[in-house]
Amino acid sequence: MKKILLTILLSFLSYPAFSQEIANLFIEKFNNDDNLEIISIGKKMFQVMESVSSDNADFNKAIKGIEKIVVISSKDSILNNEYYNSAYEILTKKKNGFEPLLSTKEGKDDLIVMAKESKGIIKELVLLQGDKSDNFSLITLCGDIDLKTLAKYSEKINLSGLKVLNSINEENNK
Amino acid sequence: MRELLERYWKCETSQDEEQKLREWFAGNGVPEDLKKYRDVFQALDDFKELKAPASISRKAQSYLPAIQLYPSLKIAASVLIAVSIGIGIYTHYQQEEFLKGVFSETYSDPQDAIKETQAVLDKISSSLLKAKDCIEELQEDSVVINEPEELIIEEE
Image 1 (spheres, rainbow over the protein chains, first blue to last red):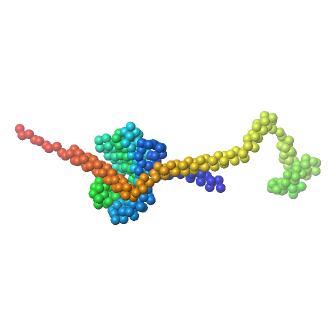
Image 2 (image 1 turned 45 degrees about the vertical axis):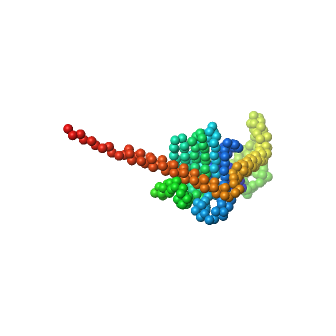
Image 3 (image 1 turned 60 degrees about the vertical axis):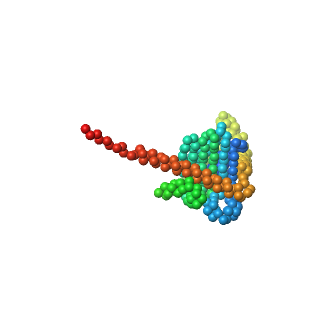
């Protein structure tokens, strides 16, 4: 009986350690911060979008595995640096399980794309962008993210930048 | 009594029977072959009369309240654990509710949601395009560096 109770207790204590979405971790740090603008599109809306845009097969295919999109942004030039650094810290912590896909810097603009995988499927794709003064944005896609499908969608609607996903995918497969 | 003694060695005797054995060995009717065990039972009697020194006795007595409190401590610890678990569950629930509120659906009109989703995909692709441009630029630079210099031989 004691062993059962101890197991239950330990499972409750370890619950918070289970992987949390990056958006949740970020917002928990900046509780009720009015400077942050949050846009959230959830599972139910994705189901509605799928039915509404039934004539747009490419769009539906691209969003098929996606369950949630969250966009967190800010235009507060004073706090953007802090937001960017905090998001970067959370993303790069090993325990949160994100692996870098790419990282670039163009002028003052920093761009990082990271992904969290589970059993070979990307569960969360994160794009962190900021120039540490004028802009900050954290975009997360949650669900079963298929990079190939996203790449095909971009080809079909002339979003040529997603072709890079193809090349990254091929490199990963090598 | 021999039978009782046999049972004593097998630890099968009751306290009353052991008392009988002690009294019998303290008396005079003990057979010669059993007199060797008289000292054993005499020692048992002596141990019974032993008393702890006053200092040890006082120390032992000081532990008594703690020993008596032990069942209450167990109950208090159980209550504390249960309350901690309850607070943990409540806090977790509150946090979940807060996050649900923060990440509630922004759009009620699916058309607006579609536009935003397309904008997100566009943003991702344009960002990746920038990255691709950077990679290509770096690759071009590395080609320039690796080009061998021309060897110029001056004729005398």
